[in-house]
Length: 354
Ligand SMILES: [Zn+2]
Image (cartoon, rainbow, N blue to C red; front, side, top):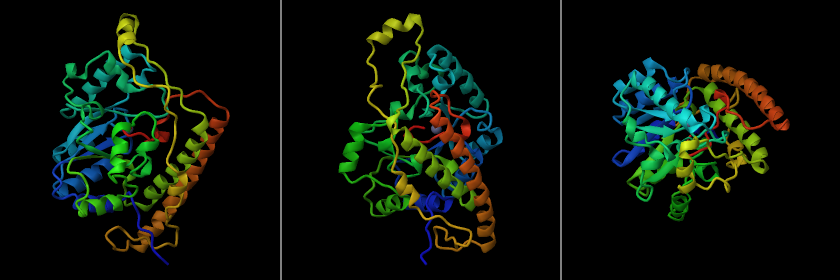
């Protein structure tokens, strides 16, 4: 029986980092949407391999963990702010700007921050980048917003969004269509981490790449890993139901004094994008390690049987919770509730800049 090779594990990430040795133009970006402990583990792994990266933290209470942020910074990594203020403030740009500054202060009380990156909130109708139609993040010492300040004509973009590396083309408000198509024509389309590793080793990966990961999904713990697999699979199923029921995209409230500016400014295309998703079948086809399955880690070493058994127990619990959660979500879908701010735990990472 062939053993499953698991993707999105820390072991696999280690392999990826190793394959990227010599690639000095690779930016490792992490969006800390949840489970900050996983970011710490990833940060330690990177430090052990002498790689520096940046961790963009959301400022929700459960995520803005002082000890973890301090340790990540002490390992030599940079800390950034993963903002979602327009969603939090329900489309009110003035309130969002205040919220942005307030949260920036909170995170700056822990570590120096000069970069901010939008959290996609794909189920929200608000795009937090719209704050910058009226306000300037540079006025508060933010020098870099990856989406707005990266020259994608020179930098190839990879993200693990949707638990695959080619999910960006299905995402909501995070497309870079002009470059995505060019990259694909150049053969720069990857689904699994192994495909990226292969390209890196074959030196067919561009020199300048931004690689975004969501550390919550990268784990060697069987239970957690299976949870990610199950929950993503279920989320994708739910998202497929939304194909014919796109998220409402709304124009934010800029306040009366800004009305003229808004009318005259060039607006992004709000109308054409539909919520789509990667093919759930692809993810569903991934091998799932069952209770009796021997699990092989990426470097070929068998994990201890006891760990596998423990993982299987955790997985069983995780699956139970996942099914309950999915049932609840499907029920919500059925009643066609209006779009609301997603609960933290059901946050989707289906966007390039989530
Ligand atoms: Zn995010």
